[in-house]
Amino acid sequence: MEQINGNSWPLIGGAVMSKLKYNLNDYDFLDLYKNESRPRVRMRFLGMQHKQEGKSFVHIAEILKVTRQAVMEWYQWFSEYGIDGLYDDQRRGRTPFLARGDEEKFLKELDDLQSKNEGGRATAKDIQKMLEEKFSAKYEHDSVYRLLERLNVVWITGRSIHPKADKEAQEEFKKKLPGFNKKKFASTCTFR
Image (cartoon, rainbow, N blue to C red; front, side, top):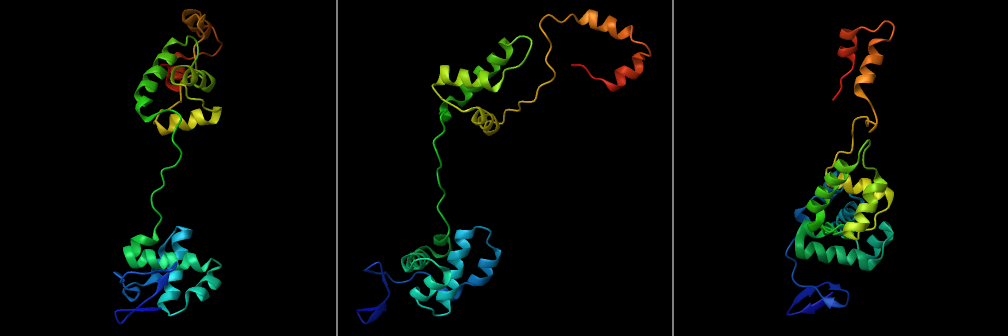
């Protein structure tokens, strides 16, 4: 503690901490700890519970198996921002290979790719190749599926029709099957 203008201020990282905006005794950290699902935040709540009980930064660090500096930072975050200071900031994550601005164009190209494909459907390899050629975005096979999921593209299709298939010949074949019942067959099978 350091005396400044007759007041005691705890030292944090060698600098004098500003006057506390939030009081530890105003919160039930044990209850917050029990109801928090994120492990890092739970640890910080537990640290503040120990601080509320009057334990030193060193003692809390020993109990929680963290550094003294970490506990002091948590205390500083709490004193400046309250409970919100103990939560992690939103992290941005990795920048996607396909730029956010190109997503609509990609979806149009995907529709074109599917419609040009005769007698089958576009595969992940086809999409992977199209992404690299048209958008200079190099995706791995599994990442293509994650991209489609992120863009809410449902990649479930019906059974493909071979380009040389003769629909009339297939219908004639079905009629000649022994025990073929047209009404029963129509109720069990749906064709699109």
